[in-house]
Image (cartoon, rainbow, N blue to C red; front, side, top):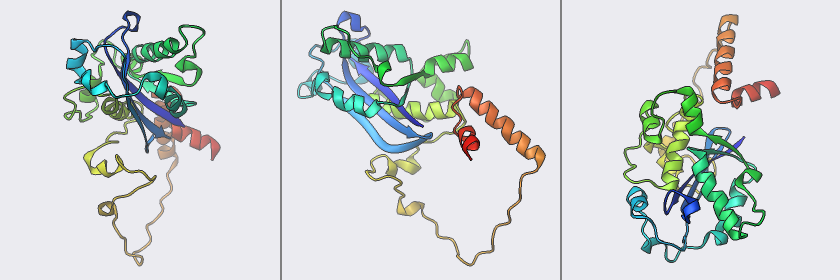
Length: 247
C-alpha cells in the first residue's frame, strides 16, 4: 500500500482570487512505513504573496524569483503521486489549489484533476469523526497524540507533511515517532533500508534459543478484536488484516 502525505503553501487563501501554490511537500509511506522518498518543490507563482500568508510560512517573494513555474514541475509531481492514496489535512484546500493550477495550465478547458490520479483521505474529516466537538487542527492533533512539533515555528509544506505522517499513523493505529531524532539519519538517506552504525547491536551467536510460546485461544481472540478495531479506525486499511487474509 503506497500512501503520500501531501501539503502545500500558497500566496493566499482563495484560488478563485488568483492565489497560487508556492511550495509542495510530500512524504511517501509504503505499508505504513516511511520510505526515503520525498518530494519538495518551491514554485514561482507569478504574483505577490499576501502579507498574512507570508507571516504563516515565512516564504518571501524574493525567495521564489528563480524558482520554476508550476507547469515546469507538474510532470514530476504527477509521476510521484500517481496511483497513491493521498493523505491531506483539510483536503479541499490543497486539492482546490492543485486542481486550479492544472486548470490554469489549459486555460480551464477540460483540465485533469488530482482525483484522476489518486484516491484521497482527508485527515481533518477523519479527526472530526473521531473527536467530534474538539479542535482538530494539526497543532491540536499533535498535542492529542503526543507528536512533537516544537520545531515548527513556521509552516512549511514538507515539514507539515512529515508531522502529519506521525499524526496520521497515531490516529489510525497508535504508531508514533516516525520522524523522531533517534531516526534522523533516515531523513537524508538516499538508499533504502539504511541503518546507522550506532543502531546496530550484535547478539551472541551462542546465546540460548528463545522459547516459542503459542498464543492461546483467548489471546488470539483479543488479537483479532484489536485488528478489527484498527481496521475500523483506518477505514478498512489495516495492513495486518490484509496480510492475515493473504497468508
